[in-house]
Length: 334
Ligand SMILES: *[C@@H]1O[C@H](CO)[C@@H](O)[C@H](O)[C@H]1NC(C)=O
Ligand SMILES: *[C@@H]1O[C@H](CO)[C@@H](O)[C@H](O)[C@H]1NC(C)=O
Ligand SMILES: *[C@@H]1O[C@H](CO)[C@@H](O)[C@H](O)[C@H]1NC(C)=O
Ligand SMILES: *[C@@H]1O[C@H](CO)[C@@H](O)[C@H](O)[C@H]1NC(C)=O
Image (tube, rainbow, N blue to C red; front, side, top):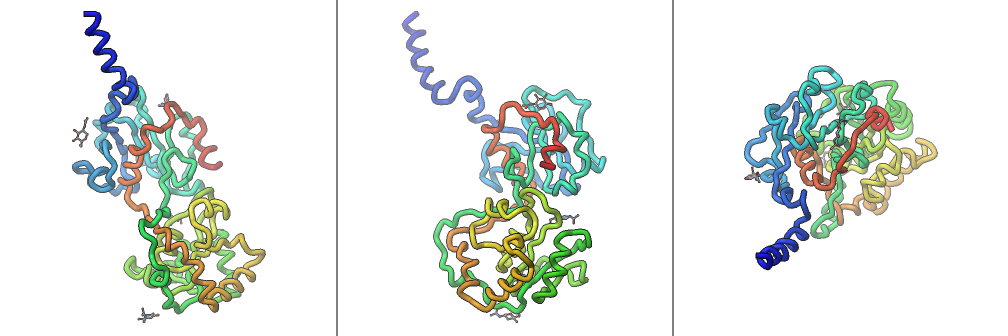
């Protein structure tokens, strides 16, 4: 009898060591349940079947939006906009199950995030475009190309405008407005969008930008890591060299390869910037340097909230075991 016990113990021990004991033992094939409390901007998408696997090859991830599943959820996600507007509320009336995490999700700049002081000591996770968030959900990113492409085919050269800008929300107080107003006295800037009543349809957007040497990827707010589709989609996918304004140069350097963009702050004056753009336009070789990244990299856009939510599962095992945002307002504005 004793011998049998010893034998089975010796047999089971290596298994336990392999799988991790005890939490990993049951966690290995367990599905993680992510509950989205309300859909961002009220627009919902299908969560039928195994969406995270079917669409994004992320396994063991159960993405749901039925509030009745709250007691079984590992992570409950709250989109900030509806909370600060008051159209949705946090479920303080429900007891929080042991180990359940609440995630605060937002893609907006701090200045458009509303009053977050009310959310002290509530959330365990942040989900934003910031690189230091628990779950980083950028507007886009660079992925290495599997096979190196040939550069020649990749440089769009059928250009008719020097600098283009698409702007819908024109505000005098924006820094980008001041920069635009000065820049246009130095070089011609072609402006599209709601502000000038030359709105581009989504079908016309990229082809129009592709006919510009440079695109002003000017963010509407200047905040840490706040780099939006203006860079990732409009400029990079449109095939114009981005001239960027928003967070500091180092934030861009952290996510984009060298020589793939031009930051306004790299120049002592806008006059210098304007001269440089003109010089690049006239020198095809110099200009094409700004497309060299295409040999090694491709740009991926993120547009689906489901993909962002599924990402929680890929990172679930390495989330901090215990964390509370005691001052979310301070974190967001840091
Ligand atoms: C996990 O989810 C998948 C897909 O919905 C399902 O087929 C599987 O049985 C679940 N596994 C467990 C352990 O619940
Ligand atoms: C180049 O752009 C012009 C418009 O600016 C367009 O009419 C023409 O078809 C384009 N040519 C090529 C080869 O794409
Ligand atoms: C700022 O830009 C972002 C990204 O393009 C956009 O989603 C948002 O609506 C803009 N906000 C304002 C107030 O213009
Ligand atoms: C999540 O936050 C709550 C509220 O502050 C806290 O009681 C709980 O221990 C936290 N859970 C984890 C897993 O960090």
